[in-house]
Image 1 (cartoon, chains in turn red, orange):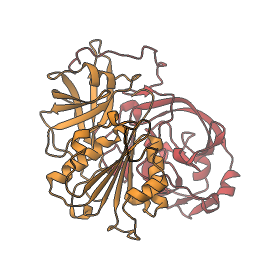
Image 2 (cartoon, each protein chain N blue to C red):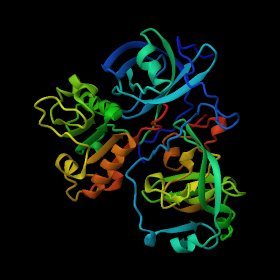
Image 3 (cartoon, rainbow over the protein chains, first blue to last red):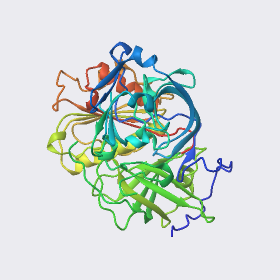
Image 4 (cartoon, one colour):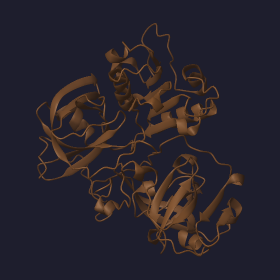
Length: 200
Length: 254
């Protein structure tokens, strides 16, 4: 039973839309930036997206990637630092399209990025229309500080799983922790179950 | 990724506010008596949870302001449209109980271990100085002699947090201010937002020491500040992996 904090009360009376804001989150209209190091700037001519660990490695150049079928989606995003942002609009390539190009059986991936960031995800959370590699935000090219030229978008998990500056996926037989997961953040990160830290 | 500890579950516990100290008009330090605190590392943060009498709860993360081994302290800046920070900076009194859990985070930390025996560049924007102050205090407590430069960007002298503490730095610790909006009469220091020229003057030279012997930078503050400092350091030759950043979360409503 939590002790009552004498004199503390809700200050934001506007009701948050029912069922859209996970426990412990609040809605922000900003788009905060959180990263562990400097923002990398990769030239599009040097950019590729690769999937490793399948039967054959596959890779797309920026130009090839732009030619893949894209989708525009509007989703809510939830950061482990407790902000949620509703109705964000993204354009990108579904992971279904990308993983269809590979023959594999591995149940997990480690996403890898410019700057050395990694994060781990089950393949089942990337397929079935739940995840994208997004390169456009609200109709404009995705800014570098928000993960451009392209980032993962896995909106049903805490946003650290939506790795910025993503460059590819490594298919893996076991679920091994990525960057924040090694520092004690949750291996899966479901905001609706408040899986912020290991053991939550 | 050395130094990663496998932890058990972080559980909420009730802490008692031991002391409350005003740092500036809008910033207050709370020392917390936490019954079961397993220790922390300089640079880590903790979570606070408040509960209203109607059961409404709000959680936020705050950097730990004290060194490992010292009583746990947080320093909170009041954001006028916030929900938790006005309570922590105006309403809370010594003796009040609040829930905490932690420590959290293991990347933006400095342990003072042998591998950390390189010059430190600390860059703070506003209340981004809080985890860097924990690093400075830890450096003193472990008797480290690594040279440190702290570049502290504040809007005015009145908004400098830990001003008296920083006015008497330890040996080999230099504190360099830039006051971006208002300067006292006779001010001869920097009076502008950080830029590459300033970083070139203040930062330890990257000096080709790109490996583990080069300087290590810790940058904490609002996004614009962190983006600028980190980009300038990379342009000056700092390898990106030697520039650790911590950016504040939402600017609107924490």
